[in-house]
Image 1 (cartoon, rainbow, N blue to C red):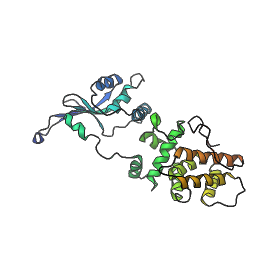
Image 2 (image 1 turned 60 degrees about the vertical axis):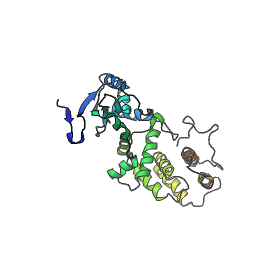
Image 3 (image 1 turned 90 degrees about the vertical axis):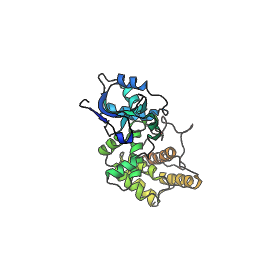
Image 4 (image 1 turned 135 degrees about the vertical axis):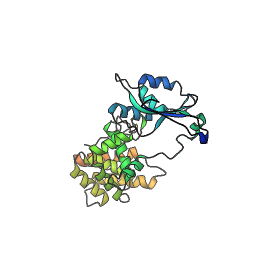
Amino acid sequence: MTENIVSLSLDKYNLPPITIELMEVTPDQAREWLLKNVKNRNLRKGIVGQYGRDMVTGNWAINGSTVVFSDNDILIDGQHRLHAVAALTTPGAAVPLLVVRGVKEQAKRTIDSGTKRTMGDRLKIDDTGTGNSNVLASLLRRAVMWEKGQFVNAGGLLSPSPAEMYGYLEDNPGVLWSTEFASANRRRILAPVSVVAVAHWVTSRINNVSAEWFFAQLVEPTELPSGHAIHALNKKLTAEASQRVGRANETEMLASFVIAWNHYRAGRSISKIQMPKGGLKNSNFPLPK
């Protein structure tokens, strides 16, 4: 036994000796271990990307999760972590990992069989100051994507990690205001509460006074001239709500808010909100001004 290795066994249960080691794993070591990765689930590149960004930025945490090898030295858990380590290119890179060896290979049938903790669950446990943790989680996810230049609602390789979302919350506590506004008006604005929260946040950062007026008009419209952007947006949201079957197209709905906002800010009239020709893409997504 060394300082960082603990060996455990329970004769009563006829278990083989199991060792637990806290160690720094280099990219070369990770690549070597991945050669023992046989008969595993399909690799999720988005998860590898999350882990890798956290490792590079120093946000990687030892949370008790382990890399697990069976009693016949087969990797049965931890492939995503190891792929993230293997992809590191910084000279001298190494990542601390807990490594367990000696588990019976059949135990892989039970790995990850519990309910995964969502970001909403994490925020609720942490008591972040809002009773609407799921709305906040959705807003944080989209806000981090937005900061990285991903405006359409698709995670891919830029799907944010919990550490990235917590970091954004710490740097931008104003997201709590947008979360509370959207949650309080979920039945008064005909759009998914998550979309309202994101739209409120991205426009508030441009001009919070204008955003307050804009969204107040959506909640309780006053008499506005014909052709005002608020009328066009309300018309779009009402039509979408009446025709919707299943989940809303959140990317298109967010774009509708931004298009209306930009016309309002520029003082331009608009009778109908239209999406860019060819469909919404990251390259043509309207940005608030």
